[in-house]
Length: 573
Image 1 (cartoon, rainbow, N blue to C red):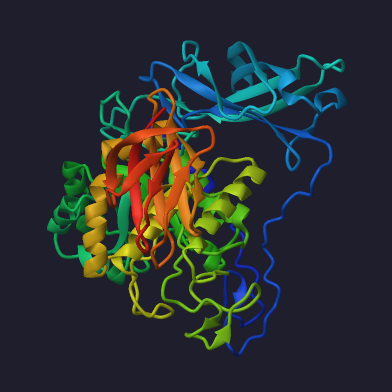
Image 2: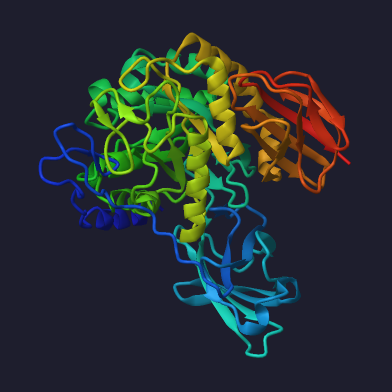
């Protein structure tokens, strides 16, 4: 079945590539900004354009599959539907539907098409206005598994509207053949961002929270395959091997790399496979995907490391994405962005999963110690773009990217890439063990559904604490709450800079609570709650101290230690 895909890939490989941009002649840039003392500041452009506020309420209608892919062995699927009322994006609501949203209902007429021919429909569904991620069952009875997507078209009609107003939207549905070549498949749950995988002839999807490091080939791996066994034994479930040293300008040589793939397969150590994409040479990318796509340990691809910082051609990430997806629709694609706001939409269009590498520890974010220049919105490079040098740089970046996604109308998954290095260039020291856990869990609190730290090997303290955290964040309890729960920002009383997230599973009457103290000093009494939720008791502490009580339906601590992190399972009233 791969012959057809590779024919398509050959066509994509011949597409034109936009050349490098933004640089005035002779000026080096990072995130679009001049950063050398010999160059003057200029407006880098590339800032995300927010739509203007609409005084008229808008319907932001979305209908898409819950899972990024389904296989023919999946008994059933579902669609997620948003009928969100917005003042930023969407189509204008008629006058009579602009108030009392809960009294307004939409009738959904959903059709599934293959090559513009209708093959199935989903009927008799009505939803109120301003609903988010409502789930509608999806049957595969009339669908034939294939390697190219079906089209879902939806017409939503306001039932109570005297003008019979309708709205339309479309999306893609992948219903793929079961693999028979020994390869794996990975899918994204668009409700939560959780990944799950299936291997060989299994018909059961296994959820996974990726927790790992970037590890450079020349610093750790290029010795023998026992390094993979040692790495796996420390509790990490994914590996991202960075092509460095002898591999700095070429992909992995298969004769050297195949033993590592075999070892990964045996240990069930999953690969975030770095294709070392060269925007000027799609042939190398084609060769790598051809070779790697059938390995059971492949979890996802990684095409670009900081393409926004480097100022790669704006269409480069999308070219790589389209080529990979045409060859292998069974695995998602990831990349890492470094800039706070530089052509986000263009670069992020080339991946399903976006990593944010925000490195705020032990660095001067206003003056470049490397280039002896200031750093601001239009000039300079300080190693953490438009940062304040605080932990909140991490959460602000994730929150901002999710806001960008909502405006664009897509559902990217976001991972964190916490700082696990130091004593180099912009950074005067390594983070402490406590700082590392804060950065990891702050990322998770703000929607990171995977963690890939830069880089391994790290300091003794960081390696020790990340080994200790591994069984918690990769464990069944933690992963189960992230898979089934609804993430919500928690309420904090008694202290500032305490970040709290809840994952509530109403059906079980339980919740996961993550509390992160961003202060280097301890606090007084802290109360943690969630509107509309009352805690009955603490079931289990997964990480941190045991000093939590329950009073008046809230979690109470007499005081949090500096940079203390607590991960708890609670029972609800």
